[in-house]
Length: 395
Image (cartoon, rainbow, N blue to C red; front, side, top):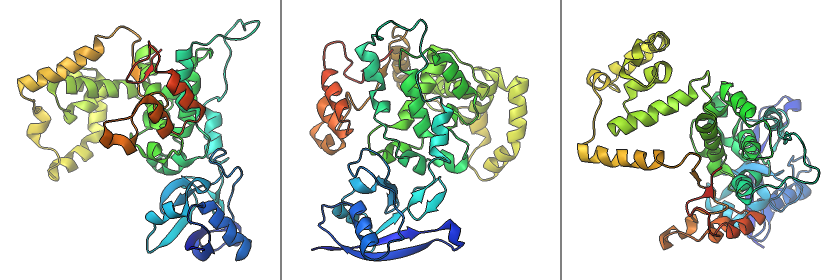
């Protein structure tokens, strides 16, 4: 029987002692899971080891931990797979981040994860009048929310969210992905109020920093950051929500600067975010106030050579022919009919990373790659006429 060494992060807040590492050698077949190894170590060597688990089938999400520094479901990670990322041949297992530890590998999800889920009103608010029988929902609408519905609430994305490390009040990727599940549902009556609330909250949809860590962490292919970007697009473009955090204006300043110059003119981003999309934006009282507050940072950047006076006063422009190509992209996107939008939903279409060399994968294969279960069947159905080859049809 193969032997594996597990190095477990141990911590009991009630004991008043500092966290420490505890090693145990277990004997299991290599195809068995890290969870089985932890349970064997607890049964054979130390019954006080704390680990939360339930289904052992990657469905309940209870056994979320960090294995060799990466978020994972312990029941869904084989020992031989864990060994590929092990240092010195030892598999390290520690509790998830951004949540207080209750004991060893058990974290207090209610204090962070579930509190943030409750924050987004995670239930459907019926439209009135309520139908006598049932709502008839378009197939396209349900396909649109399939990806966010696949979340098993394991907390892996919360564990690795860099925004939450900096701002613990950030609503977080799991809760915001849950919010899109209802914003994307035509049966919900509070789309605007939900979006307005999340846009105006300084810890809401515009607090995400696009680090992609939640996408890498998710074991079910939910891609929480993509759902946050959807919330932003629906809030700004469909409902024209002009939020007090300048999130919408900030995004518009980015896209418009790239359209006009072919490359981001960073010195103009701040004034245009606060003062409007114009070279005169810096004369706006609000933009002027923000520029004054930013002077210490700007001065430090100038002294260190990260910014040059020429770069502040004059933007770098691409060659005219290259700029025309970029503007053509904008004309194509902005020339679409109102409401026409293509979203990448891996439960319907996309690519299988393992088959990149083969030139991509079919929608069915992409669905399998996203581990969507029943969503894979919906993905197969999405290949019918009327479905976009690039993603789910937008509403």
